[in-house]
Image 1 (cartoon, helix red, strand yellow):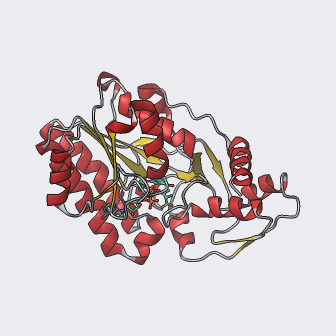
Image 2 (image 1 turned 90 degrees about the vertical axis):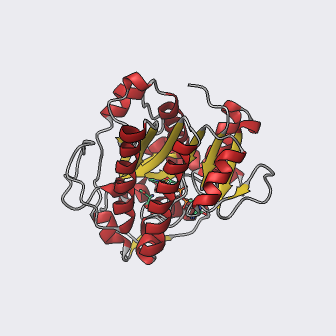
Image 3 (image 1 turned 60 degrees about the horizontal axis):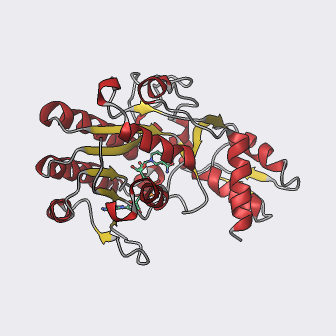
Length: 312
Ligand code: NAD
Ligand code: AKB
């Protein structure tokens, strides 16, 4: 598949701010149109685009002759619980507008990250397969699950090449995370690297699946380029690199910062974490598009610390 003009929505966020330079390197700067409701003012390619505004989405796809969309604009889990109406609007109306405009503009591929948020308290906790009980209890999870189904519907009904993968918590240092439940992991590493202690908003034994950003970017590209004939799934691939509890992360950080200490004072995000699984079965992603993460917990923490030190 060739990608001539790629639009990235939500391009100012944690993933988008790294995906745009990554895709620019792979496909050439001139092929990428980054967009966000709060555009990055230093990149001249950026366009202001609110995905909840259907006319603007349509116009942008037509004007820039978009043939590929990485649809990242969303409201994440913790912010979604603070403002469920906004989460519904951005995550559902936004997804609907992107899919509708994509069909109208004959877009070749719409790739949308989903999340472990689609799972709920009735989901088995370990090695969770793609097809399982998925009854999310957050607005974020409900909207992400519906977005997966919408993608499948647009593929079945209109032949749109909609793809997606369920990311676990993503760890990165370039752009602050956008109000999720797994953000504690990033905050803890950053505080430890600054020589400070950290008050964690989850319990010390809350195990969640995680992935380092370079593996997330590689996964998005691999899924985008995968041969259609190999895909048995479309919008709901499980991917994850390792699972960790806050205490295990604290222990790993103590190898570099022996005086570092975390305290644990769970807030409303604990019940969100409690509803999510501790580990995922990513075998379909391995079989169908060669998912292969390179960073385990040790390598992630080591690389984060190197970059946080050099960016001081
Ligand atoms: P983020 O919150 O960092 O970024 C989202 C971006 O969307 C922000 O820049 C925001 O300004 C933009 N946005 C919000 N409303 C918008 C609107 N109406 N129109 C256009 N843009 C709008 O999120 P992220 O972490 O980069 O996540 C990107 C995608 O990946 C989301 O679909 C999210 O569900 C998914 N995901 C992320 C993680 C993670 O750990 N970061 C894990 C699982 C899934
Ligand atoms: C969040 O915590 O909301 C995100 C996610 C796992 O989807 N990081």
